[in-house]
Image (cartoon, rainbow, N blue to C red):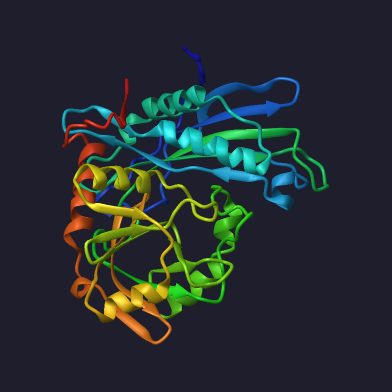
Length: 356
């Protein structure tokens, strides 16, 4: 279906950042996508306009009751000049899962993907081509009805912005240091842990700041009930190699169903690894470490793709994993997924979508 989004091109194009000095999330392209919703018309008036400030009433519901969601994916430019998206259909599905949890109206998934493709096509010359860089895509929806009162909004905005980015972590693929948080919790059963909503991240900042003060890049969350089962890392899903078994937490409603997580699981199975989705206690990890069986740990997510973990601290136990170096499984997962994303490896999974 041809959606024929109206396009208003900027009259004041910005200078593009130096790809050698790109940091994550600091630069934005010339255009953005905007679409409105109201109860009479549904989703309508999708358009691409120059990037710039938006007008919002002080009484807009999102500012008071946080009815908002967001997503994240990337566009890559291949060596032969093609522009590829990685599994955007999964982002569309996850958007509607989050929308359902937050009482935000469902959005047509084909329209969602086509809106992303249309905007990326307009700003395709912003996609950096240096190794480790990409064009980060941020779709988001928020309630913009002007009123006070705890209820679902009658109007919303769906927007997409783009940002040329370098590595999410300054060290790139250098192993990170994680702190196991055993006081604060990220999510509990029946909550919004599996939804991609801003409140989940705002609620994690306190624990993250404490971890930073102690010299750790991120935190590993435990379950909100017993505080003994590992769940996810601050901005990504976690994988543990214990002996010959690779373990990741199950999707039981408290962790985000990561798209990179799903990709890692499928690739591991295809390559013959013993990958298991099960509940895993932090005590089991400590015991495996003491026995010399804690071989690798890595995180998966859109922003960093794969991030190896070189150190994990839980209470008084400081675990140095694989001598603080990236492990072979983490390296293989990064090389495979990033290779597919950038067109260096043939996509026999059918995951990439070309923007034409």
